[in-house]
Structure formats: C-alpha cells, structure tokens
Length: 371
Image 1: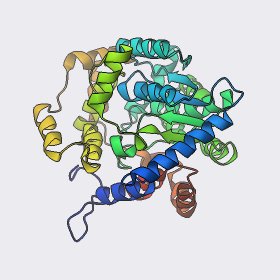
Image 2: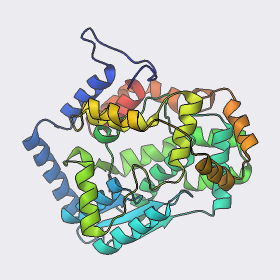
Image 3: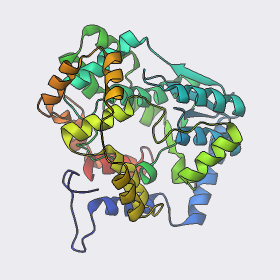
Image 4: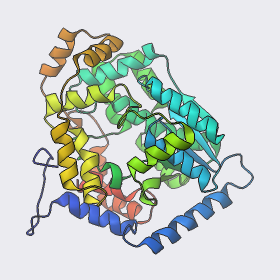
C-alpha cells in the first residue's frame, strides 16, 4: 500500500496506520494465541450445532464459485455443520463459477439456492453506477450480496452465516476506495437510473439502517469469517479443492466476469489498484513476503484488455464513445450522494460498543473510523 491510500498515516517509528489496525485485529481474534483462538472457535461451533438441532440446516454459506467460498463450504461440512449454500447471480457469473458451484455442492451433498434477476432488469443499476462516476461500479452486487445473507438467514430461520473472507486475507478497503450502504445505492439510482432500476434494487436491498438494526440487534444474525479461525493458505486450498472436489481454478476473482473491467476502470479513473488490498493484508499478517507481493505486481502490471472491455460494454448496452464520456466525467464519491455515513459518524461510540461485544464484526469500526 502506498500514497494512493487516502490519509495514510505513520507513527514516530515509521509504522503505518494499517499495520496498527492489523495488530488490533490480531488481538481481537487471538491470532497469535492459538489455544485461545481454538477454544473460542470450538465453543462457537458447539453453540451453532446446539441451536440448529431439529432444523434441516444450522448455518448458511455464501458461495460464489471461487476458491475461498468453495473451501468455506467444504470446511463447514468437515467441521460437522449442516450448511445451506446461497448464491447471488449478479449478472456476471462466469461459466467456470457456475460449474464450480454445481460441482462443489453436488460432491458435498449441500443444497444451493440462488437469487437471480433477468439481466434486462439488473443492468440498469450497473449503468447508473458508471454514470455516477463513483469508485464502486460493483455497488449493486455489493449491496445485493450482503442483503442476501440477511434475507436468507431470516427466510431459513438461521442466525449464522459463513463467509470465506476476512480482513486478514482480503484487507479493509480504505473508505474512499469503497463505501457501501443501501441508501447510497438507491441515491445513485435515483439520480442516474430509472424508476424500473430503482424497483429492482428496492426488491433486494436489505442494507438499509432499519434492516441492519433488526438483523443485528433483534435477530442477532452472526457473520462468521472462517479465515479468521483457520490456516488459510490459498495455494493449498486450491490444490485440495481441485484434487478432492474437481474445482476449476482461473485466478483471483475468476468467478466474476466484471472484476477485471472494474479493476482497470478504477485504476485508470481514480488512480489506485484494488488488487493491492489483499496482498498487502497477506504481507501484514505474515502469510506472504513483501518481496513476493512486489514481484507479482512487477510481473503483472495493470493493463486493459480491449476485447474484454468491449464485451462488458456490449452486455451493458454502452458504446465505447459513451464509456469514454463516463471516464471523462469528474470523480465523485459517496460524499456526493445521500448516505448513512453522517449518521454513522455520529454513532461512533455505539459502533465501537457493538464491535467490542461481537454484535458486529470488529473491522467494521476500523472501516468507518480508522482506515
């Protein structure tokens, strides 16, 4: 991570604020205390199994077809849980991801449910985000994926949702790099989309204040980041999935056709690489060396694949001239739209209290107030 990170700060020893955030997360999740972390994990598993007695399933696993979510489902079964898989079809799911979802769930004997919308109803939301000139072109998917977790939990009468990501393996995106809330998405659609686009978004949007308070404080829905508790070696995970379950690899985030387009757009328009976020987190947590991370970026510089860009624009119904016009628009951010962020800032003590008591993830506080 470098000077492209907004408000990068260093202490008197030259240590950046992101490393201090990492240290706090390590203490919170007992990363350097193997026995305590193991005890906490086992107690949590026992509680989930006890709560799920008499039900068909005791947890939900969000699955995309990528390595992390596939391994999460695999481990849920291996740990003796009875998961139900849920998937959001964001309109950009690759053929490889579809095959992986079918293969993994079939081999493990886990039922999977998918939330999908006709592409003609969904694409307007993506186009609106591009026209808004914000650094979250994937905002519809980000909101929908998070919303689906809460929708699925309520629908199935389950409180525990497993994910295959964590701030230790994926990092925490600086606020100016990526901000997500349901009000933000609807504000963007109102300004740059149509009434039909807004209807689709409202149908799946559960990332609004009232919903989050209900699911967090009333239902006590729990988001569990499995990489926090287990050894998460990406190379070993992919080998296991390939050899035991017939999983097909294809690179980081190969489950989504839109990701390379998004990464290049943000780099070209906003001047930073989202790709740096995960390797930087792996360096800070000691999983890879800084030299290896730098070597990767030296050997894989950011560049545009014109053919891929044209395919994405064609699916969105945009011409190259229209896209060039979007790229020429002034940069905007969540600060230019109505969001919940001003209210969140005022509720800083409450967010800290919720995080300390495990009612929300610890990194949520860092996302809004530290990173």
